[in-house]
Length: 265
Figure 1: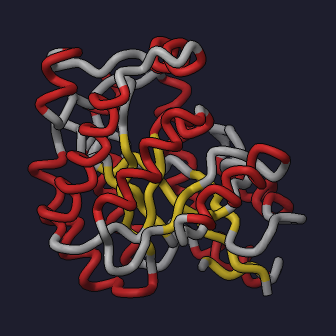
Figure 2: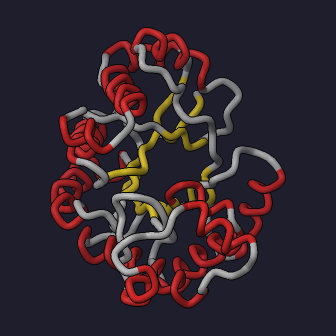
Protein backbone atom coordinates (compact mmCIF):
# COMPACT_ATOMS: atom_id res chain seq x y z
CA UNK A 1 0.00 0.00 0.00
CA UNK A 2 1.33 3.41 -1.01
CA UNK A 3 1.23 6.31 1.48
CA UNK A 4 0.43 9.76 0.11
CA UNK A 5 0.44 13.06 1.99
CA UNK A 6 -2.54 14.94 0.56
CA UNK A 7 -2.43 18.48 1.86
CA UNK A 8 -3.43 22.12 1.48
CA UNK A 9 -1.10 24.98 2.34
CA UNK A 10 -3.41 27.99 2.52
CA UNK A 11 -5.32 27.77 5.80
CA UNK A 12 -6.33 31.29 6.95
CA UNK A 13 -6.42 32.77 3.45
CA UNK A 14 -10.25 32.83 3.35
CA UNK A 15 -13.12 31.66 5.54
CA UNK A 16 -14.48 29.33 2.83
CA UNK A 17 -11.08 27.68 2.50
CA UNK A 18 -10.73 27.31 6.26
CA UNK A 19 -14.15 25.72 6.74
CA UNK A 20 -13.40 23.17 4.05
CA UNK A 21 -9.96 22.27 5.38
CA UNK A 22 -11.16 21.80 8.95
CA UNK A 23 -14.01 19.57 7.77
CA UNK A 24 -11.77 17.44 5.53
CA UNK A 25 -9.21 17.03 8.31
CA UNK A 26 -11.83 15.83 10.77
CA UNK A 27 -13.19 13.34 8.24
CA UNK A 28 -9.73 11.95 7.40
CA UNK A 29 -9.85 13.19 3.81
CA UNK A 30 -6.73 15.33 4.14
CA UNK A 31 -3.47 14.37 5.80
CA UNK A 32 -1.79 17.78 6.08
CA UNK A 33 -2.72 21.46 6.36
CA UNK A 34 -0.32 24.40 6.35
CA UNK A 35 -1.33 27.61 8.15
CA UNK A 36 -0.63 31.09 6.78
CA UNK A 37 0.17 32.89 10.01
CA UNK A 38 0.95 36.10 8.08
CA UNK A 39 -2.64 36.43 6.87
CA UNK A 40 -5.22 38.85 8.24
CA UNK A 41 -7.49 35.97 9.25
CA UNK A 42 -4.97 33.98 11.28
CA UNK A 43 -5.73 35.85 14.51
CA UNK A 44 -9.38 34.75 14.18
CA UNK A 45 -8.91 31.33 12.60
CA UNK A 46 -6.14 29.81 14.71
CA UNK A 47 -8.51 28.82 17.52
CA UNK A 48 -10.81 26.61 15.39
CA UNK A 49 -7.73 24.94 13.88
CA UNK A 50 -6.27 24.41 17.34
CA UNK A 51 -9.45 22.54 18.31
CA UNK A 52 -9.33 20.43 15.14
CA UNK A 53 -5.65 19.63 15.70
CA UNK A 54 -6.43 18.33 19.18
CA UNK A 55 -9.18 16.09 17.77
CA UNK A 56 -7.18 14.58 14.90
CA UNK A 57 -4.00 14.09 16.97
CA UNK A 58 -1.38 12.15 15.06
CA UNK A 59 -3.74 11.32 12.21
CA UNK A 60 -2.78 14.50 10.34
CA UNK A 61 0.08 16.96 10.03
CA UNK A 62 -0.60 20.57 11.04
CA UNK A 63 2.18 22.85 9.89
CA UNK A 64 3.07 26.39 8.92
CA UNK A 65 3.30 27.91 5.46
CA UNK A 66 5.85 30.70 5.61
CA UNK A 67 4.98 33.67 3.41
CA UNK A 68 7.55 36.13 2.12
CA UNK A 69 5.53 37.37 -0.84
CA UNK A 70 2.10 37.67 -2.36
CA UNK A 71 -1.36 38.98 -1.63
CA UNK A 72 -3.50 38.61 1.52
CA UNK A 73 -0.43 38.29 3.74
CA UNK A 74 1.40 40.96 5.72
CA UNK A 75 4.79 41.20 7.43
CA UNK A 76 4.86 39.78 10.95
CA UNK A 77 8.28 40.98 12.06
CA UNK A 78 9.13 44.58 12.82
CA UNK A 79 12.13 44.41 10.47
CA UNK A 80 9.95 43.33 7.53
CA UNK A 81 7.35 46.00 8.27
CA UNK A 82 10.03 48.69 8.40
CA UNK A 83 11.24 47.70 4.94
CA UNK A 84 8.03 46.77 3.13
CA UNK A 85 5.42 48.45 5.36
CA UNK A 86 2.10 46.55 5.47
CA UNK A 87 2.44 44.63 2.19
CA UNK A 88 4.64 41.72 1.26
CA UNK A 89 6.69 42.14 -1.92
CA UNK A 90 5.67 40.24 -5.05
CA UNK A 91 7.03 36.79 -5.80
CA UNK A 92 8.85 38.14 -8.85
CA UNK A 93 10.57 40.84 -6.81
CA UNK A 94 11.78 38.35 -4.19
CA UNK A 95 12.98 35.90 -6.84
CA UNK A 96 14.94 38.57 -8.70
CA UNK A 97 16.58 39.83 -5.53
CA UNK A 98 17.39 36.28 -4.47
CA UNK A 99 18.96 35.45 -7.84
CA UNK A 100 21.13 38.57 -7.63
CA UNK A 101 21.98 37.85 -3.98
CA UNK A 102 20.47 41.17 -2.98
CA UNK A 103 17.94 39.96 -0.40
CA UNK A 104 18.20 41.77 2.95
CA UNK A 105 19.25 38.64 4.85
CA UNK A 106 18.64 39.97 8.35
CA UNK A 107 15.11 41.06 7.40
CA UNK A 108 14.13 37.70 5.90
CA UNK A 109 15.70 35.82 8.80
CA UNK A 110 13.70 37.92 11.26
CA UNK A 111 10.49 37.31 9.31
CA UNK A 112 11.02 33.54 9.24
CA UNK A 113 11.66 33.56 13.00
CA UNK A 114 8.57 35.68 13.67
CA UNK A 115 6.22 33.49 11.66
CA UNK A 116 7.45 30.29 13.29
CA UNK A 117 7.06 31.90 16.70
CA UNK A 118 3.56 33.14 15.90
CA UNK A 119 2.42 29.66 14.91
CA UNK A 120 3.93 28.00 17.96
CA UNK A 121 2.63 30.59 20.42
CA UNK A 122 -0.98 30.75 19.19
CA UNK A 123 -1.38 27.05 18.38
CA UNK A 124 0.40 26.02 21.59
CA UNK A 125 2.25 23.35 19.64
CA UNK A 126 5.23 22.97 17.35
CA UNK A 127 4.62 22.72 13.59
CA UNK A 128 4.63 19.24 12.11
CA UNK A 129 6.02 20.63 8.87
CA UNK A 130 7.20 23.83 7.23
CA UNK A 131 6.39 24.92 3.68
CA UNK A 132 6.99 28.18 1.84
CA UNK A 133 4.31 29.98 -0.13
CA UNK A 134 4.55 30.50 -3.90
CA UNK A 135 7.40 28.01 -4.30
CA UNK A 136 10.00 30.45 -3.06
CA UNK A 137 11.94 27.72 -1.31
CA UNK A 138 13.25 26.87 -4.77
CA UNK A 139 15.62 29.78 -4.22
CA UNK A 140 18.66 28.71 -2.21
CA UNK A 141 18.76 31.98 -0.26
CA UNK A 142 15.18 31.46 0.95
CA UNK A 143 15.79 27.78 1.70
CA UNK A 144 18.80 28.73 3.80
CA UNK A 145 16.77 31.24 5.82
CA UNK A 146 14.02 28.69 6.43
CA UNK A 147 16.36 25.89 7.52
CA UNK A 148 18.35 28.25 9.74
CA UNK A 149 15.15 29.60 11.34
CA UNK A 150 14.01 26.06 12.16
CA UNK A 151 17.39 25.39 13.74
CA UNK A 152 17.21 28.60 15.80
CA UNK A 153 13.69 27.69 16.98
CA UNK A 154 15.10 24.65 18.77
CA UNK A 155 11.99 22.52 18.31
CA UNK A 156 11.86 19.35 20.41
CA UNK A 157 10.67 17.42 17.37
CA UNK A 158 12.04 18.89 14.13
CA UNK A 159 9.33 19.63 11.55
CA UNK A 160 9.34 18.01 8.13
CA UNK A 161 10.08 20.15 5.09
CA UNK A 162 7.74 20.22 2.10
CA UNK A 163 9.97 20.13 -0.95
CA UNK A 164 9.26 22.67 -3.70
CA UNK A 165 10.94 20.38 -6.24
CA UNK A 166 9.62 17.31 -7.98
CA UNK A 167 12.15 14.42 -7.98
CA UNK A 168 15.46 15.31 -9.59
CA UNK A 169 18.80 17.01 -8.99
CA UNK A 170 17.45 20.01 -7.09
CA UNK A 171 15.28 17.82 -4.87
CA UNK A 172 18.24 15.58 -3.99
CA UNK A 173 20.35 18.61 -3.12
CA UNK A 174 17.67 19.94 -0.75
CA UNK A 175 17.41 16.50 0.86
CA UNK A 176 21.16 16.47 1.51
CA UNK A 177 21.22 19.97 2.99
CA UNK A 178 18.20 19.28 5.22
CA UNK A 179 19.58 15.92 6.34
CA UNK A 180 22.70 17.65 7.67
CA UNK A 181 20.40 19.59 9.98
CA UNK A 182 18.46 16.48 10.97
CA UNK A 183 15.38 17.41 8.92
CA UNK A 184 13.22 15.11 6.81
CA UNK A 185 11.99 16.34 3.43
CA UNK A 186 8.69 15.17 1.98
CA UNK A 187 9.03 14.75 -1.81
CA UNK A 188 6.79 16.86 -4.01
CA UNK A 189 4.31 15.23 -6.36
CA UNK A 190 2.01 16.74 -8.98
CA UNK A 191 -0.83 18.80 -7.52
CA UNK A 192 -4.36 17.52 -7.96
CA UNK A 193 -5.40 17.99 -11.61
CA UNK A 194 -6.68 21.41 -12.61
CA UNK A 195 -10.25 20.82 -13.66
CA UNK A 196 -13.63 22.30 -12.80
CA UNK A 197 -15.57 19.12 -13.58
CA UNK A 198 -15.98 16.77 -10.58
CA UNK A 199 -16.52 13.73 -12.82
CA UNK A 200 -13.31 14.53 -14.69
CA UNK A 201 -11.41 14.89 -11.43
CA UNK A 202 -12.73 11.55 -10.14
CA UNK A 203 -11.44 9.87 -13.31
CA UNK A 204 -8.03 11.54 -13.16
CA UNK A 205 -7.47 10.75 -9.48
CA UNK A 206 -7.51 7.05 -10.29
CA UNK A 207 -4.13 7.42 -12.02
CA UNK A 208 -2.81 10.51 -10.30
CA UNK A 209 -0.79 8.72 -7.61
CA UNK A 210 0.83 6.18 -9.93
CA UNK A 211 4.61 6.11 -9.73
CA UNK A 212 4.93 8.51 -6.78
CA UNK A 213 7.39 7.89 -3.97
CA UNK A 214 6.14 6.87 -0.55
CA UNK A 215 4.78 9.83 1.54
CA UNK A 216 4.94 12.17 -1.47
CA UNK A 217 3.18 15.49 -0.79
CA UNK A 218 0.30 16.17 -3.19
CA UNK A 219 -1.07 19.71 -3.05
CA UNK A 220 -4.78 20.53 -3.24
CA UNK A 221 -6.92 23.69 -2.91
CA UNK A 222 -10.45 22.71 -1.78
CA UNK A 223 -12.87 25.32 -0.48
CA UNK A 224 -16.49 25.87 0.41
CA UNK A 225 -16.97 28.74 -1.98
CA UNK A 226 -18.65 31.89 -0.67
CA UNK A 227 -19.15 35.43 -1.98
CA UNK A 228 -15.97 36.72 -0.36
CA UNK A 229 -13.85 34.07 -2.07
CA UNK A 230 -15.51 34.85 -5.39
CA UNK A 231 -14.52 38.50 -4.99
CA UNK A 232 -10.92 37.72 -4.06
CA UNK A 233 -9.92 35.05 -6.56
CA UNK A 234 -10.20 34.45 -10.32
CA UNK A 235 -13.33 32.61 -11.41
CA UNK A 236 -11.36 29.62 -12.73
CA UNK A 237 -9.52 29.08 -9.44
CA UNK A 238 -12.73 29.37 -7.45
CA UNK A 239 -14.34 26.75 -9.67
CA UNK A 240 -11.37 24.41 -9.19
CA UNK A 241 -11.61 24.86 -5.42
CA UNK A 242 -15.29 23.98 -5.46
CA UNK A 243 -14.63 20.96 -7.66
CA UNK A 244 -11.96 19.61 -5.32
CA UNK A 245 -14.19 20.16 -2.30
CA UNK A 246 -17.01 18.15 -3.88
CA UNK A 247 -14.70 15.29 -4.88
CA UNK A 248 -12.67 15.03 -1.67
CA UNK A 249 -15.73 14.93 0.59
CA UNK A 250 -17.45 12.26 -1.49
CA UNK A 251 -17.61 8.55 -0.59
CA UNK A 252 -16.40 7.82 -4.10
CA UNK A 253 -13.05 9.42 -3.30
CA UNK A 254 -12.44 6.96 -0.46
CA UNK A 255 -13.49 4.06 -2.69
CA UNK A 256 -11.00 5.20 -5.32
CA UNK A 257 -8.18 5.26 -2.76
CA UNK A 258 -9.06 1.73 -1.66
CA UNK A 259 -9.22 0.44 -5.22
CA UNK A 260 -5.86 1.98 -6.13
CA UNK A 261 -4.21 0.79 -2.90
CA UNK A 262 -3.43 4.32 -1.66
CA UNK A 263 -3.38 5.33 2.00
CA UNK A 264 -3.47 8.96 3.16
CA UNK A 265 -0.40 9.26 5.35
